[in-house]
Structure formats: structure tokens, C-alpha cells
Image 1 (cartoon, rainbow, N blue to C red):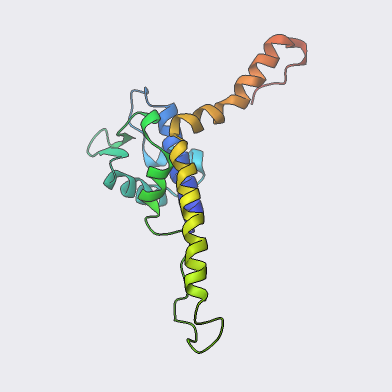
Image 2 (image 1 turned 180 degrees about the vertical axis):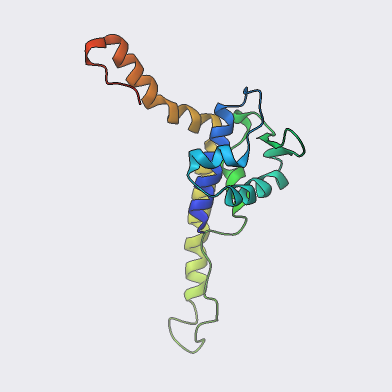
Length: 160
């Protein structure tokens, strides 16, 4: 699984949990998996990574499940990114390039500077966005549709 899909799946799970945070039952990986359309085992792995970073907590036993360990406004996408992908976005060669080649001898340091700048920009953007922000943006199209349906009831589309 790529780093991008891990972040997406983990964010989806936390946004789902934020939406249902006041539900009386705990959020099970099976219930979350239906929304994410992913295997519950994959989600449990991601939730376990996030539990280690205190983003979620788990309850075992009869009423087993997951819940947010912090308020949605307190969980930045950067927290999730670091929990599920703690390494840099890019890496250099797995084997060192030819040190006698005019390109091979210095490409690592040149790319390291570029990758460092990209990583910093990515982390700054992720730090600005919270689970609450993503939940709000996720629900916005539905709210707009509902407002349009109220304003023009004859043109309202049937709900699925």
C-alpha cells in the first residue's frame, strides 16, 4: 500500500469517527470498512498505528471498538501522516550511484535539497488542516444540495 492511500484511508476513518462521535456504540473496524470500502484488517492496522500516536483509543471486550482520542479540531492531517507514514515522502537511491560519474557523484545532494523542500511544504499544508476541517468540507456538498432542495422543492432530486 502506498503512503498516499494510507493517509487517505486513515483520514477517511477518522473523519467517519468524528461524524459518528456521539453514537452510543463504539466504531468497529467493520463499520468503518463499509464506508471506506476496505478490508477491516487493513483499517485495524492503520488504527493501531494511530493508537500508538494517541489519535485514537481502542476498547477491547464486549463493547469493542475505536474512538477518537482527541477532539476533531485537535487532530491535524500531519499527525495522521506521521502516524501512518513516519518516513520521508521520497527516498534516494537504494544502492549508491557511480561516484565516478559526473551525475552520480552529486545527484544525491541535489535531490536531497529538493525533496527536503517538498517535504517541508507538504508538512506545513497538512499541519493547517484538521479532521474537523475535512469533515466540514465533506459535508458541505450535502448541505448545499439540501439548501437547494428547500429553495426549489419541485426540482429536488430523490434521496438514495
